[in-house]
Structure formats: C-alpha cells, structure tokens
Amino acid sequence: TSTLLLDGTSLQAVAMASGAVHSLVVMNSSAGVRLYEALVVRGTFTVLPGAVFDGAASLLTVAGNSGAWSTAGAVYRSSGPASHGVLWQPLAGTTLHVADGSTVSARVSVSGRVRLAGKVYLTGAGNSLELLAGGSLDARGATVTLRDTSDLSMSTGAAYLHDAGSYVVYEGSGTDRGLSLSTGPFGHIVLAPSDPAASFRFRSLFLDGSLTVASGTLRLFDPARLDVKGDFLTTGGTAVFSGAAGSTLAFTGTIPQAWRPGRSDDVRHLEVSG
Image (cartoon, rainbow, N blue to C red; front, side):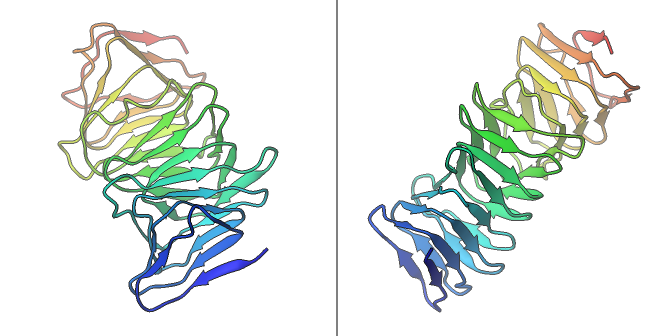
C-alpha cells in the first residue's frame, strides 16, 4: 500500500527495471517526470493538475484490484523515438476507474473492465484507444475526445458500453481517420476537426445515437453500411458517400429522426426502415 511521490524541481527519471509500485503520484510541475523503463502500478496512477509526465517510449501498466487513473489538468507528453504505451489491465472481477477530465498521450489498450467517470482526452500523432478482445470500456455518460490524429478501435470480443449520454468526438486533423472503428455499436459520434481539410472514412458502423459532421469530409469504405438510429446532421463539413458504390446509409431508429444534409452531401443508397 506504499505510495511513491515525485515532487522535484528538476527532471526526475523513473527507471525501475520493469519494476512495480502500488501507487504513483506525480507532483513535479517544473521539468517533470520521465518514464525511462516499463513500470507497473498496482493501485492508483495520478498526475496532479499542472504537473508534467513524459511517458517517453515506455510501457505503463495500471493493474491490481483497486486501480484508478487520474491525469486531469496534467501536462502529459510522450517524447520517445517510439510510441509510449499505456495498458489498463485491472484484475478479473474488478474495475479500473478513470477520473473525469483525464488526458493521455499514448497508445492506450483496454484489457479488463474500465469505467470512464466523464471526459477523457486522447492526444498525440498516431495514438489510439484500443479495446482488446475481452476488454470492456464503460463509457455511459462519458465523452471520449480524440485530438491530433488519434483514433479509436475495438477488437472482436470487446465491449463499448454506452447510453444516450455517450459521445466520441474527433478533433485535430489527419486523413481517413475512423477506419479502425469496428461495427460498434456506439452512442453519438461528432466529427469536429480543427483542420477543415481533415477527412474521415468509416467501414460498416452502427450508431445507437446521432452522427454530426461539423467539419471535415466524411466518406465510406466500399462496401459499407452506416446504420444510424439518431439524427444525421451536417452542420459545417461534408458527407460524400457516392464514391462508394456498395455503400448504404440506413435510418433505423424507432422515433422520428432528423436528417439535415449539407449542400454538397450525397449518398449512394438510402434505406429507411425505422
């Protein structure tokens, strides 16, 4: 049950030869803390608001039976020549809790049950939030925001728990983001990249909520079926589906659905069955 506190005024290195600690708290808001070697945290991992953590190119695993992650307001970096990895891996029958407002700059893998308390921000070029087979991400009432060129993927056998308050928001930039999404289902998806030239491409995807294209261009893989039970709103971007000859846009909700296409939107096949 010991806790390691890092509160220096210069750069602090963590190099424990693949060691483990129960809890780690980063308080260094000066040069910060850099992870030089793989580390396992068997309890809680916390980076306080304003504190600096650099995952470099190392793997950080949060495991145990009382796991918690809190990096809200932290400066989270990954400066290594290779990718920084984070593995959320609570023990069987337990849940790892991720605090509201947490930010992560890493390739995050979910193995076991993970519960999001509210908003989580994934940053960094090429980073991802990946649900591994058998993993479960409870995103009910939560928002996953994907910044820079980060993305979301879900393996066969994984579960993404969602409700009417669940959102996946794409910000940042990039080309053909969204290809790694599985069929779902997911809640609401919002495409709102800061770069209007950003593009997205979906394979077959099922949404129990709405799809909003606020910026950028959305296309479909060929063939693909986009099944929407909520509204489909183009508020500033473009949805161009005609280039995928085998694609279908399907409205399958059980209550009235709003479809507000943009002036340049087009579809190849349209199906209304709700």
